[in-house]
Length: 156
Image 1 (spheres, rainbow, N blue to C red):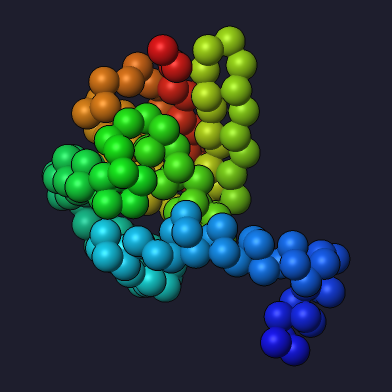
Image 2 (tube, rainbow, N blue to C red):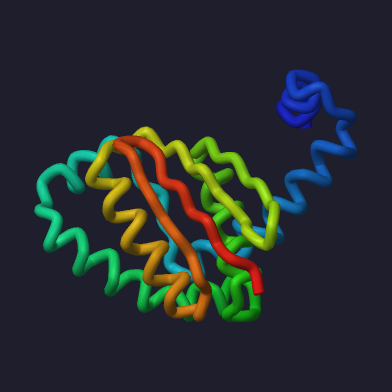
């Protein structure tokens, strides 16, 4: 309890607010993530693995993993919709410590995701998310730089 109080003080939150955040995080991610197949891996391990693979292999893996995400969305959110996609995306980015900005205007939701994992991860991430959105029947444009992925989804 002392660690929790200290953490709340550092964050500038009342203890009850910190406890509420922990409960929400548990319900939104921790309760179902491992059951749905998520694991914790050091970013350096992923970067090194990505750098050993060619684009053709990365493309195949991205498409195959994107095609299997319906089960993950069902397990974690209870539905296979764009809302489930966005919920998992937001929670995964937060849990991974990946910086992102989300905005909404003119019928579009835009995510700018700064992952700092390199160009091959950007390529993989783009293909994977593009395919997931196609599978959900969503119109989207995706672009990437060496360390950033931009996802723009037209909301129906």
